[in-house]
Length: 252
Image 1: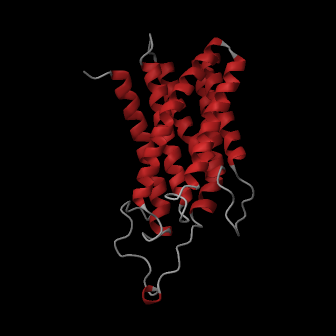
Image 2: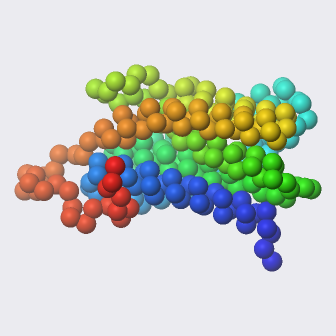
Image 3: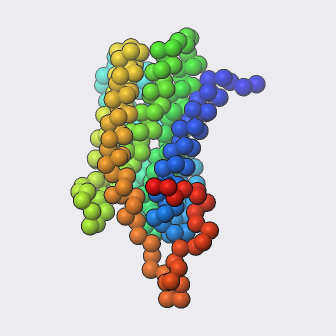
């Protein structure tokens, strides 16, 4: 037996996050970083770690949305702090682990973690709506805009949480900065539920556009400046393997 709301949520999460990882991460990883530095297996494990972290966070998100609908402001603030704080803690620990933190491709693995978290949160938000008592066009539009906003806010926060690379125009960055954009983004998503579908779509669009704006400003300075290690003397003439990355994306 297939539970339709859950299947719908899983499909939406897989399409959005899968497209992001293939077209965006693959585009930057393939031409910038040779296989000797960028490890696709680590990217996969980063995504799995995000799915694991996102599972308890999805419960917090559902409670947060319910608190907004009930008008419980104190509860809303506590749940946003919990949701954002645990996300930032997870990324901080990931980039300082022996497995993920020993090479300079950490930003890619951090975005894989954020993508996994976003996937589970999207799954929770979509399943919550389509499992509700009624479904209409405005409500469907709201949950689609929420899904896009969740991914946008998560990946933007992931980049903003990474300190500025040396010798770049970017300054600042860290968990507090990443947490701030996450907190504002989730507050807008919940506020939209409180105000109704029409305002909810506008609030989710604002969160998505804000996250996209931050991400666009940080993506190239952060992801294109990851330098490969010095190749051995005998291989300096051609340090990049001919096979390239399995992503096969080199068009950016």
